[in-house]
Length: 311
Image (cartoon, rainbow, N blue to C red; front, top):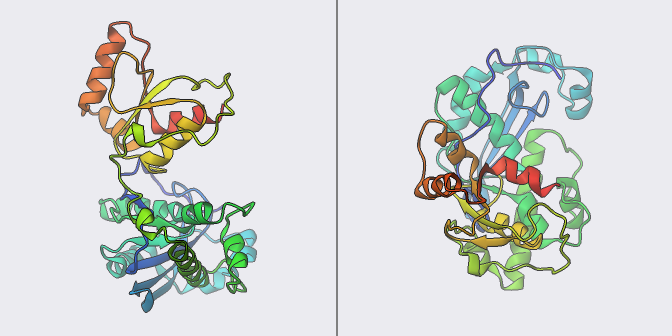
């Protein structure tokens, strides 16, 4: 893939919250880029749909001229050519207008973390401030609402709901598809009578007693089996409730407070990053004190926790 930043941006992001709420006002966002890594690759198209009361009221659509020419793969994938980009505005010109269009709205999209990371890193690089908008990932919702699907890519969800998918891989078309799929997912949730549950599904203050394993078929050789874990801070990749559920499902024991029985204190990525500068929570300080006294307790980041889950 072509295009690099001159200076690699930090990968720990102080982003907004990942929501599962069924909202009626939001902005659907999609990007086309020269690759998958926001540290090295560039945005070549940005699009958004402003939605009020579940109806599209405004649109934003703009090609972005990259620093380097795009390769044949990207052209084949997106139908965007170097000729099309030649007269496009630079990201320095497009980003402020795009951010103004988004405003403080909740951002919605399919696998939206990909798009948000690109916007976030460009905003840091060009404007020196983080993107703090909360966001809704329709892929997360689809995984919960449509567990029978083998995959939950945008094309899979669209096909399930018979949503037109003829012009995939252009950002405005993908915005429209994600919007249509979100309305279908919302309708299915409302029909099931679980709307209230969904709108209360984002609490960071979930308690350990609220989480129980959905299976008892545990792998007792897993490194986290039988271990006691405490989560603290805002997780970057999922809600705390989701992380606690995954931990319970591999035979782990969730707890709310750090004690002598705690084996792992897991810090959200942003909290782990802040500790490097000396900002430590009371749970972190207590865990360090127990570790120094000889207790079997480890303080790890969210990313290390995900790596351990894969063992």
